[in-house]
Length: 205
Image (cartoon, rainbow, N blue to C red; front, top):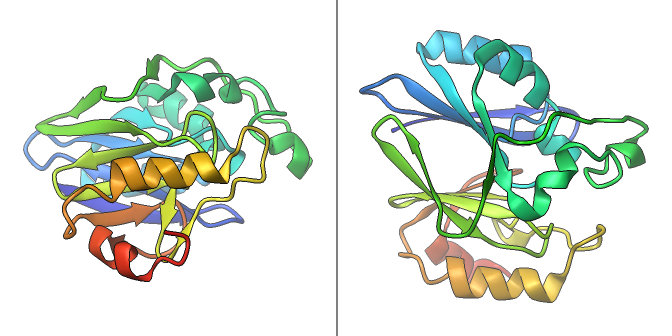
């Protein structure tokens, strides 16, 4: 599995390119900004984006969706409970930032336990509400893309509309900390970690 990390935008949200070496198909996770840079990296890696997956609907994670979809024709996917954030600037918080991001509805609304296939790679959808109602993580074997649910020694903010810290911590404990300790965490901001490390060092858990 090819994993490329691109921190994008003013808030340096981590955009991930997940590529299948055999088929050269790729998923782009959270293209928050700088779509041109993401497209250039796909070209460098000789990958074709077939899927765009959003871990949640905040502006810093969805800002490049329109341009990327137009250029690649990739299917846009987001959890059903965050689906409206794609079309509503108030829900995706872009209105708070003095912008007005609104895109077409997603091609597929995800649910907990769904799978997304990218070439020979299968990504499992894990619904982890609390940062947003429809926040998700994506798991492929011993790799977890955690969005703004779980960070290295931190967790996502819960003071935005639709957020709940108790809901977030419960989701992390019940759905993420039960994963193998060697599972690598690739979060929505900042550096990577492991489940084992977060069990020991994360002050929120």
